[in-house]
Length: 362
Image (cartoon, rainbow, N blue to C red):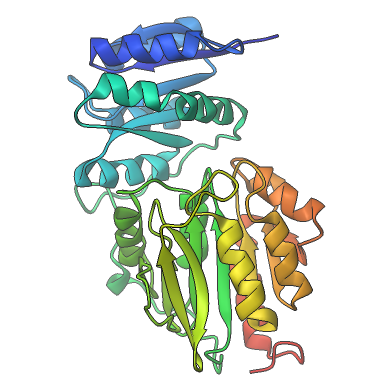
């Protein structure tokens, strides 16, 4: 069996040792090298040609973000970021995903040794996923902030209006690995008069706030974390908070967000299954489902329930996915009405909403 070859880049000798030990305990992977800064890592990558690198964000001589940017321009490869559970760490992690990192692991600020050991199964799972991911060269955007963000939404030209869309319509999105950028692709194309949008992206606590804020700065709709009991409004997108289950319910004529602790579903909290199942029960034929890139099968069965209840569903195609697991499972469950490249999903959805067909009359 060919092993996954991993290079660990971190300025902490303890973290390098722990990650190497975790990796080398796996039968299907090996740590072929460790580096304490990106300049050493650059030479190591050239010599060792690893399949995956783990990359710390805060390091001497060149920080992880600068190194990632250069790496994804010159030699795109699977990268798992090692982030910290801080507000700054979350913001920079979102930037790293935007630049092409496949995924991230959030290490604790204190008790790093125990924390990383507890995260060992998550670390090796993310390395395995990264090794199989379709990594694409990231497009560089002109930096206009400390994080290199794109131009604020106020400076962008208005998008075409959808028109007379009723408040009964609801767009439901599920995603995992690679989903932060895929969701951004969808939401930045949605005009201010779009129906309400509810989203579950697999993400740990502490990171969805920065994710929502980043999207809100780029979109013409309002993007925010979902709050329990909040009315779901047109022109707004609501993201499941990390570590919570998110579903929709009705209160009179309105949709409302239900955010609760809940059990793990398909090993996830938040789980796409929970959100999509509630849409099938509560929204029915007024729902639109979108399944984006991600590992596993979370949400596939519930997306089929949505279709059986009358929704119209879009699934991202394999060529445009970072990881095709969740879309593949949705297709295998017969949940897809259309399988499209990522860049075609929002235009197709907007055309459907604007068309006011018999099935989706407004």
